[in-house]
Amino acid sequence: MKTPREILLARHKATEDKLDEIRRTLISELNNEGTKEQSFVTLFLCCSQNLWRELILPRPRAWAGVAALWILIFTLKLSTQDTSPVAANKTAWSPEEFAELKQQKAFFGELAGLPQLPKVRPPKAISPRPRSARNPESSRA
Amino acid sequence: MLAVAERKQLPVAAARAGSSDAWDALFQRYQLPLYAYVFELIRSEQAALDVVQESFIKATRHLASLRDDDRFGSWLFSIAHQKCVDRWRKSGREEPLEPEVAEALPDFDSDPSELLIRREQEEVFMNSIEQLPLPQRSALLLHFVEDFSLEDIARITGTSLGTVKSRLHYGKKALRTLLEEQNE
Image (tube, rainbow over all chains, first blue to last red; front, side, top):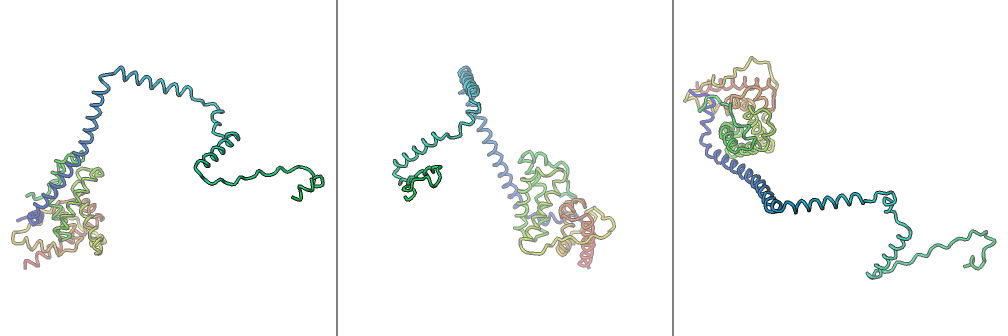
């Protein structure tokens, strides 16, 4: 007499070789993934250890000096930084700076051979005189 | 061969920690019962092997989501069951494991070894299993192969406890009738 479980498993016993093959493949893939991760970590640790042993450990004073110098530079930079409102508004362009920038742009345009843009005439200043007091010649023109 | 499936002391925690030996032990423990269950549902050797492989791969990727290590077996079977359902859906067949309405039934006798089959009845038993409707076949196979509890079967098949009771009750009844008919 057999239980249903025994009958069912015995019926598929012949497929066990194929199942073993699938299992072995999956386990080897799992091992490969584990080895890859492990090898990356090992390489990183090994490199950092070598770096520490060969570069830092033989000259501790020199490295300490370099570190102190960097700290000093950083502190000086922080202390000399201009935080006044004048410096903060520095980004606003003055008319002189704007005119200079325009000149430079025109100069570079000439150098590069770009066609000159037609100069826009500044609008005539309107004289604040009454119509009767204006020069008739100028009004005809 | 074991009369009933043993579920204790499986190296689930070690597998979660990444031990390939633990995975090997888990796969070895479940490969044949899982294959038997899947094959009896989808009736194709290659498809059943594919489902077993895919289930194992999914298990290795998602073991962290398993809260209770003692439920590893039912969790693995639920992955395989879902893969069978996906295959049916992809092949365009109608959902064969649709839940039926649960009825009030007497308590189900949960001992799978109560049904002992003589050697000359083995072939008849397997033929009878094949003739059962899929929902009943699925519930009975889970009960026979791994002696899963009603709650586990409900979880694996994604149905209610009442539905599982109903399927097991009528499945066993139909199985007995078929066995008697074929013996006459």
